[in-house]
Amino acid sequence: MTHRAILITGASSGIGRALALEYAAPGVTLHLVGRDAARLEETAAAARAKGAQAQAHRLDVRDRAGLGAALAAIDAQTPLDLVVANAGVTTGLPAGALAEDPEAVRGIIAINLLGALNTIEPMIEPFCARGRGVLALTGSLAALRGLPYSPAYCATKAAVHLYAESLRGKLRQRGVKVSLIVPGFVHTPLNADLVSLKPLAMSDARAARIIRRGLDRGRPTIVFPRLLYWGIRLLTVLPAGLVDYFMVRQHVDVPVTREREALDR
Ligand SMILES: NC(=O)c1ccc[n+]([C@@H]2O[C@H](COP(=O)([O-])OP(=O)(O)OC[C@H]3O[C@@H](n4cnc5c(N)ncnc54)[C@H](OP(=O)(O)O)[C@@H]3O)[C@@H](O)[C@H]2O)c1
Image (cartoon, rainbow, N blue to C red; front, top):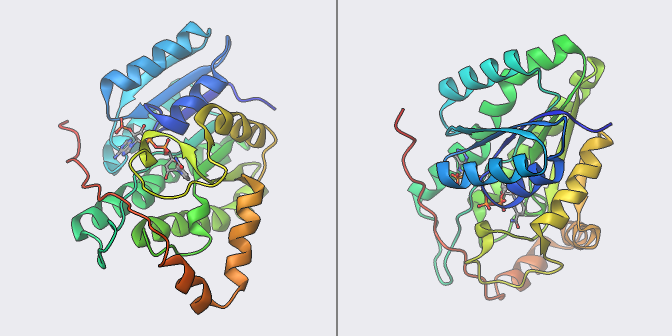
């Protein structure tokens, strides 16, 4: 079943933008959430050029009250059938560093974890009342095994995974599906400055096609690429000390991202 009324957070760039354009077609209404007005509007214009109705909403997912009010208003105007909590950032340890920047860590928790909750929570009641729809969250293969280069990022994504999994059963009884999107490396601005091997990395457009196929089928988890997934699963059953030994010897440099302040409202 394809979706017709869709809201995507983090739609101004990367995976969210590509997913919006993957769905963009006549008869589809897209609500695009992000902070950067120009990039959001560019996505909306590209979606309109493909025949969709598209509205840009400049919102910060950290703003629980503002986002909740906007989501309620949008859902009242266009009952949504797919919401994708996708907005996210990364931060980590530059080569040689031992501890992450505490401000960057608080920032990533506020966006990747609390931002996802701020997006999904207000949608649970309306979706259950209608008895249909898909609530999706973007996790990461980095949630499956802690990586020494980006502890806070892995922790936020692991929390998103367990949150999605925990929601799934009860909402399914009410006709609402929960899909957890678990990407490997996707070429986007998020990891453009990451110095690391990026095995099986793919374009955002390819990732969006895979995600859409999974969402349209109401898949509980949409994991890609499968080979990398099984590789990481293997790491989780090998002795932890051995895996740590090899991981810390890789040259990986993850830039520190200090989040900008919330939008002026
Ligand atoms: N790329 C990968 O390899 C990869 C792999 C696994 C998982 N993921 C996950 O996929 C998701 C999308 O990442 P991406 O790679 O597409 O990165 P991206 O190109 O940097 O896009 C991130 C999006 O999140 C939005 N965003 C960030 N903070 C926000 C905030 N406080 N409020 C509202 N929007 C906010 C950004 O909007 P503005 O720029 O307008 O603020 C942007 O649209 C993230 O959750 C990421 O963790 C990515």
